Image 1 (tube, rainbow, N blue to C red):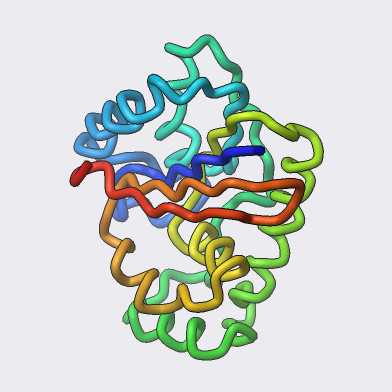
Image 2: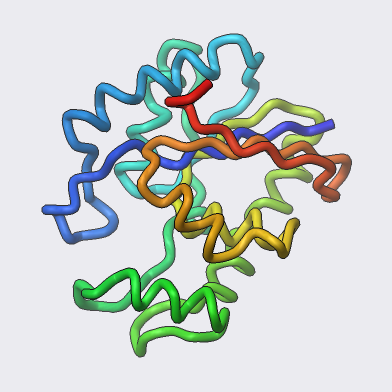
Length: 189
């Protein structure tokens, strides 16, 4: 069995509109301790991450304490919304969940995000078979992965977790078949 702990990043600083370099807030930096404590007894073999700063930084302190190097995988990045900041964002997100092919001219659809993330996940499952893996990720990207294996997880599931930073989805695999999904709110263990 391969077990993956998808770690949705800690609280980001939305004052920084550049998606790639958006850092964590001071609260987000502090909340990384929840990730460290949760993962401490999980016998983690590998730490992977989206290249986006907030995802990488969320798992970085755990990786350092566990003496593990973080490997970034570009395809685990968050969806590209557009070239400009989008408001009202909830309306846009609702449209995307209602129609997985909906996207703005310079953005990605949820279908494209899902295909990209699942392809990366399948490569990870092949390369790290029977390992315990941490993947630093993002809310939308992670939600499309969960949706791929459980199509009852949709907009309502996404909105229930979208303001929980960090958030965890533990997924177990036999080969590339997902056998279990557990959603974990680190603030309510």
